[in-house]
Length: 363
Image (tube, helix red, strand yellow):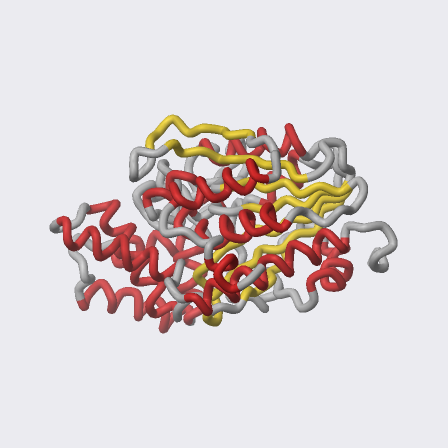
């Protein structure tokens, strides 16, 4: 795929990204299973979690590619999925690729990281029949993160600085982003029930994944790490498959070992893969593409949540906040986009090759 064709994989909006994804499936004559959300998008468009299976329906080896778990981060995952459809899946017997496009279509369209319920999906896959996880640290800083006025006052920033001084930079990151279930209008809210995206994603896995004996997954995100670099974060619950995953994808980081730019979180989406497809061995990664330093990304995220909690002072402020959030998770730069496509395609192809019997030692 040449330079121009690679850049054409990327889109300025959810509506355009969806059109390109659906068009790529149609060009390959692949059916699309659209799970429609009962809300309209920012441009009045249909919002849907679109599912395309590229390969035999009874394949025992399955690669699942996810985009848009965190709404506004969906631009890159969508581009990789569209590109993989345009290229065509490698012709391996008994192997299929399942593209699940825009798992959080509302956030993708409205440029929010969270769902229409203000829920961070990677904190929503918990057992709601049990006591919910408690994040006491977040409660200490909730009002300082999202104060009554924006930009935040000196007092609000001093509260966060004091928490950082006491608990370290990593401790502050953990308090903010671990996940919390106490403040429904807050950041990284895990919800009090499974969201539409959670329920729909699980239904898709039951429909398409229960025949598989081996499942690889590539879950594409943006916002953490060095600019244009795709950190490959181990995303399986079985540490026994880690050696094999490293043979597929090379160097992997691990949130639980402290080697990742991310931190452990409550209720990640990979939980559903293990619960709904328990018959399969699962090897997965989160592919986290860096954008800008956290000093730019976190204020943009805070401002957007502040606006959701308190409301913007005027229309221009709202537009600025939305654009700043989009820029923080989706830099409008050709070199960055080309790096994302190259690394995203590579990670998918490595997973497809790794799934083949005898291609690598089983670890």
